[in-house]
Length: 259
Ligand SMILES: Nc1nc2c(c(=O)[nH]1)N[C@H]1C(S)=C(S)[C@@H](COP(=O)(O)O)O[C@H]1N2
Ligand SMILES: [Mo]
View 1 (cartoon, helix red, strand yellow):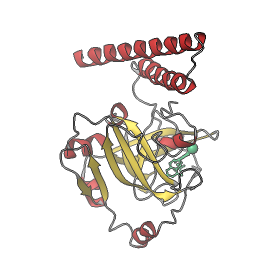
View 2: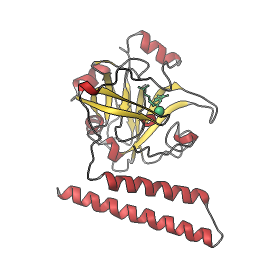
View 3: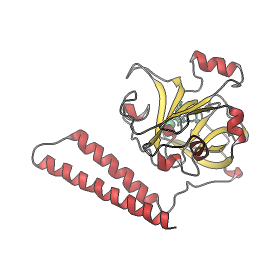
């Protein structure tokens, strides 16, 4: 209980700092020294902190029951990675798949699918919302990410988990269209944040991200990385690809894709 109060205070504190920053940017504008990037940066941090604050009293995404499952759950974005290494893994039924967890961790390691299935399991039925304007209710089974993080040990310097995926969606922007995503440690340790290997009671299919995909239920569809090959703990992501922390973020979407 006391931890909760302390963390709420922390959130209020950073929220106020974000607001201060926003007002300062406004003053810059009045004095004729606008910095649009700066302004956008603060507006985003305000919206992140405001959402964190508003969500703090209702921290779990809504869960549904089996009767609510959508009869059709659209597959979106990549549905069949063309990468040779991925195709080889797929042809072998993912027996040789290894999830690599590294970066700012105590002991980097690889996990087989059998390793992941032997870890504590969680099933949740949730609504997926895509920015393209469709939603679907699906059931997801997998290992909560916090169990893996406890096994590798997260460095106190780490701030984000980056998910590197197998698929190349489009290389028009930075020469590499490899999908990737990132979340902060609030979401990484959230009880509903899963590495899912099953959907609606069956092994995850390739269109939905086999053999392993992220579920990060309080955020929009594009944050739910499919075909996860590697999880990198890091303190920054400005050096990765387009520098905005995700494939769609590099193309203009918000980093915090709150629903
Ligand atoms: N690796 C990867 N992950 C991805 C995507 C993608 O193209 N590649 N598309 C994203 C988007 S926009 C959505 S809405 C969901 C779609 O998940 P689904 O195919 O299971 O419906 O995956 C997200 N994760
Ligand atoms: Mo999406």
